[in-house]
Length: 342
Image 1: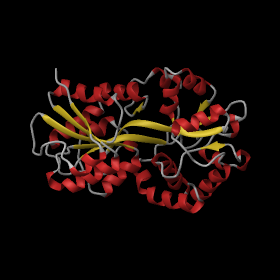
Image 2: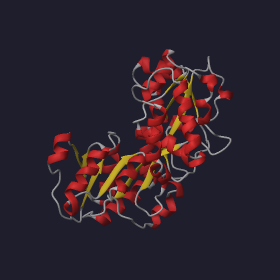
Image 3: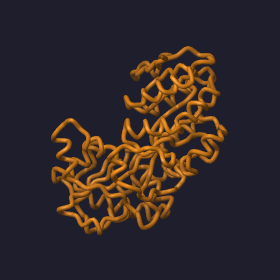
């Protein structure tokens, strides 16, 4: 049985050291990954088991990995870069990290919205930015759209992360795509006016804010909620049970979706292996692993979902091509700054 080599490299090593030797090897694949989920190890092992290709993994922060690949230049051993959120994939694309590739398998199995128009990167798992609320204090019929978060009726009731969070940047980027920058800025100002507290903490903290009564409404990626529901900690489960999840905009464009994605590095020494790995990520086996490991939604139609995700049934997801989220990222950051979203 084959096993992959997984290296979690500290910042100092990312900036100064080499993780892998350079040069191509017929039975090797080098992945630079900004995904920090232990469950991804199962993906690497399954790929090795199926193909005999040994996988080496370097984990680090997305921006650090981008800078490392740029510094390594044509000598970089990186074959694939994996990260989360279209905004981070776009940043890598802008730095020339990704090569354009063509794959009939990816074209057939992945929806149009999950593929970069030029084949530079692909989305393999979906993460929905959902709304969570206290059912005792909030009428769900008044909170059916992201746009409602800016309604003055919810003044002092909203918990949400800071503007430097890429998930919020992409949510605002989607509003820019659908409504234009001026209307998106008005929305962002409205959300700031409705905040129950200054932005603090991660997505889990926003959900717990609703459970503890600090706010009545929160915005977070869906899988943070599932983690609380599935936690071994009684307090976590109790917190999750106090809130309800809502998938917005079901009467129009659908809920905002972001991705975990990957692309082939421009100077990949093992290019064929890299393409083969991306095609593997679109397989039923890999899609089910994404769903089981981190409770992400599969992108391939009909792929098996985890029990909680299955219990939510089908709902409408925004079909905006995820590349637009990256393209609108700079404008989203400017808007956040102008409205004082900390």
